[in-house]
Image (cartoon, rainbow, N blue to C red; front, top):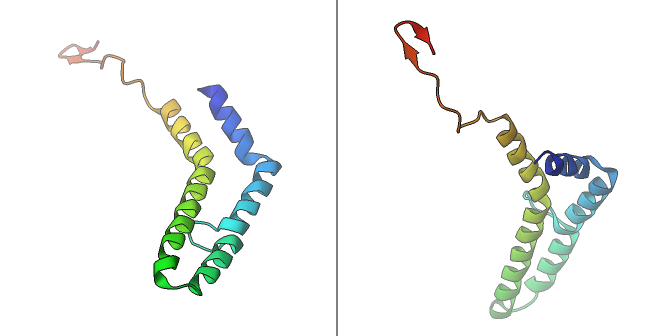
Length: 103
């Protein structure tokens, strides 16, 4: 797991990832909204009738959510790996106490 953790850490902190992330956020926004491609598409759809616009809007929103989820994955996975590395070994037998002290 250490190799994966190191790889993800290097990815997230690399200048290339930061540039890529900025580009994706510029086009597709963040969880707070925005994104030029998203806004442009929604403005174009707003000119259509509701029956035509609704399915297109759903597709755009679904695409935006999936793109944002993919962008979050490296950080989320890294957090998970860090937590499991610091988690105490649950397979170890617990120490028991007796009247004479710990065993």
